[in-house]
Picture 1: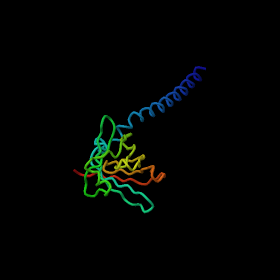
Picture 2: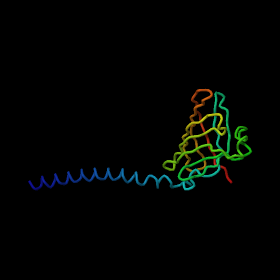
Picture 3: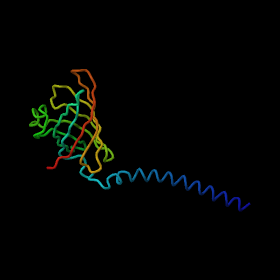
Length: 166
């Protein structure tokens, strides 16, 4: 009888230890994820800095290029259009005023998500974006989604960002 009880204790103990290990390993993974995601990348820079952002719009996939200076203000990531030779003519009209272009946040050092505004406030075009930050922190690729009140349509397309050296 003692042998059966010993065997049952051993089996029960093994099962309990496996369950605890699985539970703890998931907790451990969640705890370590932010640290591991930063290995081998320049994530400490975050998305702050000067970026050349190109989004495409319309059926002709027309590119719209603008330089955006991204900074952090009170825990919120903000981007403003800055003067740059390759800026789209619409951006060039307002670049000296450094208009707010976007506001968002970075999640898991991997995703940059937020809302964007048209540089000309009278256009009433605005929307959302989601960007995937590259491992080397030099590129971001994603999508924009926007509602045009004047056209009464929702549009979306790709948005590609390249970090500029200063």
